[in-house]
Every structure is written in structure tokens, then in C-alpha cells.
Image 1 (spheres, helix red, strand yellow):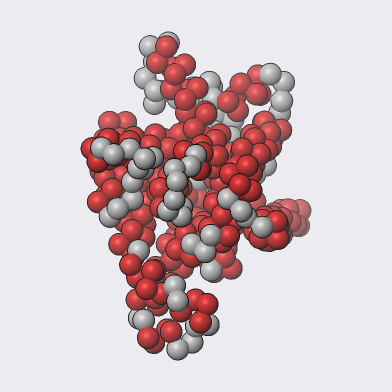
Image 2 (image 1 turned 30 degrees about the horizontal axis):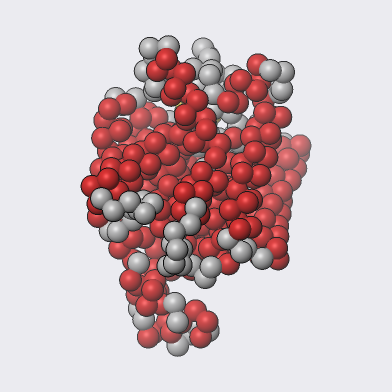
Length: 351
């Protein structure tokens, strides 16, 4: 599934780039923008397709039941009933991501009211609640659980969108968070989670070399908001063994979303204190503050990647992820991104 998503994104990305340069949407230089040429805003669509196509294909095969059970090893056959049971949750996650992606695509083209975007995001978050994905956090009140879930999903969706302000920052942070979750999903035998996360990792590994350090394509609001929603939903979908209450349900979202959540709190808080609308564009993000302190944009991005990596490690290690699983997950993602980056550098050098 990783190879399939990597291949889909690698094929679709340049096709969408060429189409966007002819018909839009593109991000044109000027004003507060630092890039020197019109840049397509279609990277997120390719990444979401790389997640959705293998995931839906795998779900359809799982729903076939006995037919696919004849060709699968016994270790996977035993999980088919669980995959079929969680099919509505998968569809709600993918459908919500698709709706938010389409909304962001329209916003990339012509701009939409922030209130309309928040309303649709809230409706998609409510859809997750309807299929049983909610943040309980040992709270007994169902109404409070629903409110907390919608607030978490909407805030995370926009927090991930907020950190899409420098080449590679958002994609790298989401990839790191997804790889942490993937290691934990593998270690705890949560194949539903692992399958979606491995597809997300494949799509981002194909996108990142085309966006960092120099961008040929941006992920756009279509991608950043949809990926924020997707990562928030997958965090909610994570389950822990029944037993005494623990801190892991509290720590997991903070760990895998540390940088976007911290940036979102800082930016929203600072803008509200200044009497500015939270959705107003500005250079008050963590990355901008690091650049003003003397770092180059590339080094600022690398530093925030490192923060996200270190923030997630304690929860992953406390969750019992074996070192060999962790190294396999990180090695596969790193090698794939490096190979695609080397191919891009080689093509550009010979062009």
C-alpha cells in the first residue's frame, strides 16, 4: 500500500502541476509571498488521492469476505471482520477529507468566507462523531464529548493549515506525526489505522521532494485543511486497551500534533490580543519568529521538524513500539523521500 500510494502521487503530481499552470489554481508571487514564480496549488489533491485510492480498494477487497480470504495469509484473514466493522468510520474519514479538500480547492481559486469554512469543517467533524469517533477522555457527559471532539477536529484542521507557510514545513510535520502513529498502530496490531497511515506516508513522501527546499508545487488550502482533518480523525480513531485510565489518550494528540497545535495556540492567541481576526494572514507563526531570530527558512523548517520528531517519541516508545518497527517505518519513509528528491535534482540539473 505504501508503494501504491507513493506511485499514485508521483504520477499525479506532475499532471496536476501542468494543468494548474494552464487553468489554475496557482499562487502568484508578490506582496508578502516570497516565491519568484507562479506555483501550482494542487499538491494536496495528489496526496489525498494517494490515500483514498488504495484505502478504498483495500476496503472493497475486505468487504468481499470469503473471496479475498482464500488468497490472504491467516494473519490477515483474522482481521477482516474488524475491518468490515470499521468500514463506516473509514468512509466518514475519507468523505470528510474529500469535502474539506473540495472546499479548500474552491478557496484556492476564488476565496471563501472563513465562517463558511468553519461551518463545513464542523459538519464534517460531526460526521465523525456520528460513526463513533469521538474524544471521550474519561468524560461521562456525551454532549461534552461531542463538543470537545468537534472543537479538536476544527482547531487541528486549521492549525495544520496555519503552519503551511514555508516550503516543506506542513508536509514534513504531518509526515512525522503520521509515522509516529504508524509505528504505534503496527505495534498494537491496529491494521485499520496502519493501512491509512501508510498510504498517507507514501503520498507525502512523493510530495515532499517537490516542495522542499525549493517548491515546484504547493499543497494549497485544499491539501493543508484536508490533511489536518485526516490526521485529527486518525488520532481520534486510535484505540487503547481497556483498563485503568491512563494519560496516553491525552498525550497522543499533543505528541503527534505538537508543532501545529502549539503554533495554532500562539498565533490565535496573539491575534486575538491584538484585536485581529484569527484567519488574517500574517508573519507571526513560529517559523516566521525563528527566521526573524536569525535562522534561514530551511533551517527554521528543519528545527520544527526536529521538535515534532522529539515531541512524538515519548508516546511512541511508552506505547511499546519495538525499535526494529520504528527503524523500519522511518527508514522506508526516509529512503523513499531521498530517492525521489535525488531524481528531481538530477532532472533539474540536466534540464
